[in-house]
Length: 291
Ligand code: NAD
Image (tube, rainbow, N blue to C red; front, side, top):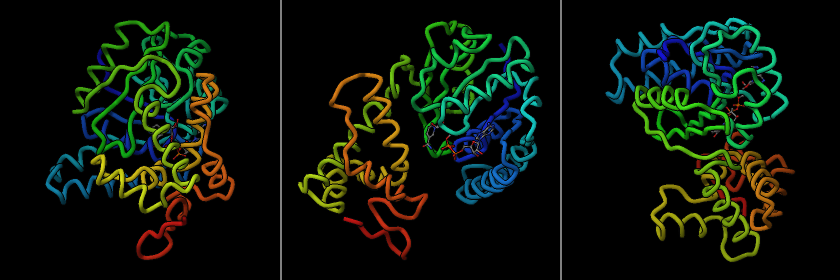
């Protein structure tokens, strides 16, 4: 299976990072979004991030220019029909993803591999509602995509070996490393990482430590490059809460109950860096703990 062209649905945080690494690896990229503004922003962000890589000597000016030349955008989903590979990276809501697949499938060539970058939705369930469950996989990139080395490959129950092998080869061409995960809630990385963050929020909630002491403790005591609360702000507290709920519902085990304090921050709209306030307040020169 020779993959040359890649269609990406959703030009947000993940979609633009995925477009960046594919274009740099030589693939033709067609980026789709329902929002024209998101498409324009995505192209500007990719250009800026590539420029940063050039200034750090990681990418040559020529490669940057070639990569930008391989990225096109469209608001018409049907334009992705001839792509060899489609990566859905739209908003994390099952109804949104379902509607995208329903609208896209009639335009796709039969051999196209269809994937989703979902962090938590069942790959088997998404695949079962398409015309190609054997050519459907979870293709889970980490944020920020140009920086993070790992990609989780998640097979649904029906995914065939040819599809898995084709995507494994793509990950290698991107210069990244694949980890295979079975299709159970939150896969590997988030299954371990998000409950750790939730436990850090419990530690704060119960007064065992404050924001600063908890983050310092894990950085200096466990050699983590970032404290768990700082990391939660980076991921987005709404995303952390949504993943805890997926674990709680999907595994039916009370050890995954979300901390009430995490729910409270989300209710307040304090979602972390993206809303300028979470466990830290980012509105000033330096982040200040909010508890
Ligand atoms: P985001 O909110 O930054 O971007 C989502 C984009 O999808 C937006 O630009 C939105 O306009 C677009 N969109 C919504 N409906 C659409 C439609 N019908 N057709 C085309 N585009 C549509 O979200 P994100 O953080 O980039 O997350 C995207 C996906 O990646 C989610 O499934 C998420 O679970 C997954 N993911 C996120 C992270 C992360 O750290 N943010 C990490 C790994 C995976």
